Length: 225
Image 1 (cartoon, rainbow, N blue to C red):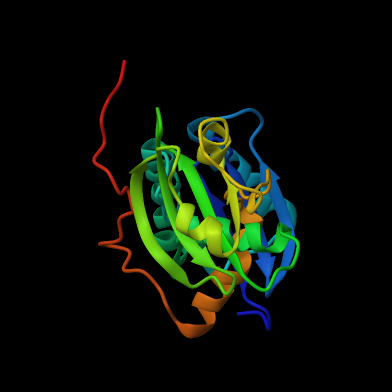
Image 2: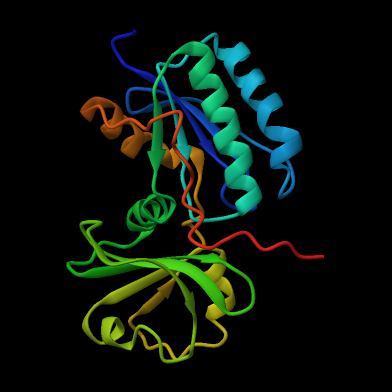
């Protein structure tokens, strides 16, 4: 193992398919699939290209564990497990909504009191969401929530509330929000934002069981036409 662990990060929970390789806390290389929802076609070739170009053999693989796209989660987890089995290296999982909250905090103007509410579109007016404070402590656990206009009023009355993600974009036009609400574009789950939590997990030895790990689907899969 190198002095700075190399971690291959895979993010496949949303429309964008992204990858990154780190050395310690630094990004060594990154890639994104062209277009959206191209995970099945693009993930493995992108991964192969990134590894060949850098010549790096990772010390661990980190997967964005959900919630999110059922198909994306299956594709990302399958590749991550396969690489870990082949190379006999550990698997790390990163909570997707916590990952988004971290990116949202970095993109937000500094305030003493923040509430960070990432949202992943789950069709119609339903989202996967959770609530975090400015220290990224979880105030409300992950849930599948059907949004109504008066949601989150208690938070809006006490702090700056930052919304981001594919679910926040559709809710902005339907909610009753005050001047304390901030909607930002940054906040999508991206592989290069996984590096800090993945490194923390690596250094603390927080690894997943390869045989039994399953991504966090939150809701059962429902096929649609």
